Length: 364
Ligand code: FES
Ligand SMILES: [Fe+2]
Image 1 (cartoon, rainbow, N blue to C red):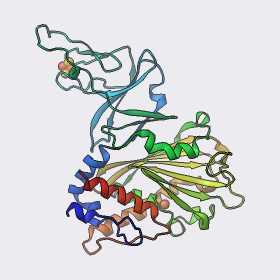
Image 2: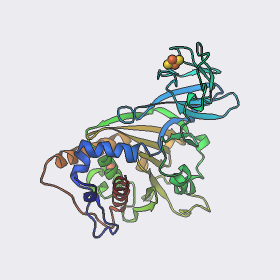
Image 3: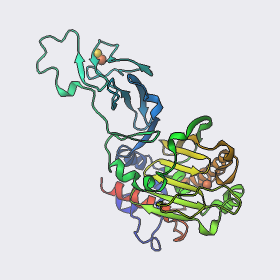
Image 4: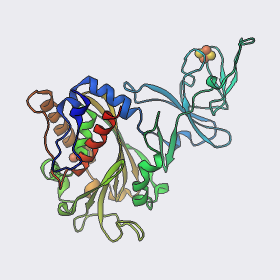
């Protein structure tokens, strides 16, 4: 498949979907890794992991795909840093577990760094010319914080502020400081399908009456709508009468409406599902062309509402979604289906996602 074959018409009424090969071919998966995943913002941790000065949180960004060892730290002056976790001497991983400390020391040959990644000292290097140089510091990596959430990007294609502007404008009023992480309602799902198929399904409410019979009664499907942003979208579901609702305050774009759920998607792989009980954050982690991990983290505001409305039974809804997404992957493995068309009223979010993918893959 050539990059031109990825073209998705800007007019949804004329457009066809991404070709099947995009979801199955390892070559397209590799190109996606470089042009989309490497350049995206990824939600990597809760701020609590680095709350106390000296705390260090090592992690591997997108294990198995980007495989970048990174380190988040909070230094003695209470400043956050994100950096490469690979020693600038011979490549050892510097910080090998979560700990609290005043500096970083590589256990291979004793090179020391500050918690901001700056080179401090190295044994047995007397006489080495042009040393230390800036390249002996641990390389800084772009990161951004929003409420509980820490994001990083190896090479951001857009400013974090641009990615999140609409979401902040619409739900910035929520009392995030009163939401608490609930490990019992947080878990990973392994899906035997391409990461973008998982997103395609997430980005439309079209399938709700067909796939989620338990969910559909809690919302007013006739008013279900999708709003598009430059780097994402939100699906807005209004509550059925008697169901719990978010009531956005004055000054919010949705003031006066009873919202059952907001489904925010940030390009490429982050979703914030906002319900009256709190937020379910979903992070899609591609593992290979037809394998994906999806991590759910729950932040609870009002536990009494958790079994009610559109935000109840999330585990069941997830399994229903997985079952259709995995079936689509099987369909695309065949060679007869090539591409489909969009419903202008119901699949604007999918079309927008495909346009962003096609543009990024074509400009490489
Ligand atoms: S690899 Fe770190 S000091 Fe040698
Ligand atoms: Fe669904």
